[in-house]
Amino acid sequence: MIDRAGRWVAAEHVRAARSAELAARHEELATMGPAALREFHRHAAVTNRQIEKRHIVSAGMQATHLARLRAQARRIIEASAPDELSIPSRYGLVDVREDRAPPAQPDMRDPVTGLPDRQLFAQHLAMAVEAETSTLPDGRSGRRLAMFLIGLDNFTEVNDRFGGEVGERLLVTLAGRLCERVPGRFVARMGSHEFVVLVEDVTSSEMVTTLADVILAAIREPARVNGHDVAVSASIGVVESATAHADPTGIMHAAIASRAWARNDGGGRWAVFDRDRDDKETARGALAIALPAAIERGELRLDYQPVVSLDDGVVVGAEALVRWHHPTLGRLGPDEFVGIAEESDTILLLGRAVLAQACAEAARWLRITPSPPYVSVNVASRQLQDGEFVSDVSAVLEQTRLPPSQLRLEITEGAIVRSDGRSVGALNGLVAMGVAVVIDDFGTGYSNLSYLRRLPVHTIKIDRSFVADLYPPDGDSDATNEEILAAVISLAHVLGVSVIAEGVESVAQAQWLQAMGCDSAQGWHFGRPVDPAKIEETIAAAGEA
Image (cartoon, rainbow, N blue to C red):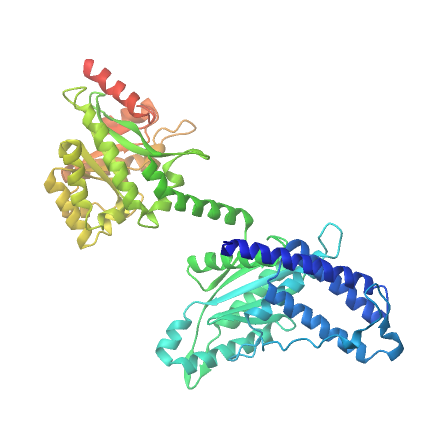
């Protein structure tokens, strides 16, 4: 039995063969008859060759376009002398007036605004791309086209507040403005709150951005509708054919992508398509899709960076840092995929996997030395808000037999300051269990020590950006920065909170932090992240010393 995909492929082959047959016939007829009729056959032959080779339009668009060509031919026939209309060919004597009339076509106009609809726009875009790419043998020409895909940001709110009639009248107003402000362009309505403008005579990128501003202003301008003052904004995706794949599908993809960028940046703006950005986001999307299965397959593994006491140099802890050993991309650091996981519930799956692996490996340290270091694991704010997080931590500790006192959970400063009731409850539950809470990257968020009195925080970790300004290798130490660090360390101790400095890379930095009373530190000066076997060697060596 042939499946749906197989039937589609077969239909495509049939359509390509039919297009080749039609192209051959038109190519022959293009050498006969009046000049206007020859030009018609030449254009029809080019269209059919495009369809045969690239399949750039759907079957419905093909039928519509060829019907328009046939209508054009009939107009030519009506204006021609009768003796010019009998054309000899290998198909016999053909009177082109006997060609069947084109089938009736649906009205491809939007019933509300009167603009061309999505189907007519797709047809027009395909013809515009064909005209652009068929000028020169290399497929390029001096002409460029630009597309502006417009999405109204808050149109649903207008309908909800004023009713559907006001919404429709607003659409009519906006359609009129677009036609007025960008005259001579192809303007269409693509959907319930979407318009599109196609410009086929682009001369420069500056022209494109100027038109984008004009379109945005036309949408933003308030309208008086049925006695109501109504205003909407828009997110506009802008694409030039020179910067996107020069085919209708590629141009549409580019416009949709750039409109999403405009909307994600807050709306009420336009964004120009950028190939590099699109490639990166496509790769990012591929990683997001692949990540859950990679976690299940065990492709994510941990390295550990030692945390050292500044009093005696003893390794007191180790931070677990996740790496993705991707089968084709190689070793990926957390900056390349953790943020992706945080955009969805994948962060919960990732967090559980990292926690389980870190606790299992830290449990082995108990057998290496009588004074094993703690393990520190990073936690996303989304995990704190999950109602199962505290019970998950408890289950992992019980399963791995790691004492709660040997686990520290690191939470970013911004996440803990914005903690809601559920997050604060999770923090209290963790501390009641015996797990310590660490504020990571302290100084990059609110830098407000007052919340340390209200929340069960054990340690703050000073961000590496502050430490980097201490005795940098290429300049003098920043005196103001030194005063700030000294004050933070002192105030933290007053509040009963210990301090870790991260990013320590030199002896001078370590000595200054020690003199200021900083409790511990981590950084390349003390050790780079290493795999589980090597951190165990470090722990064993420290235990024997």
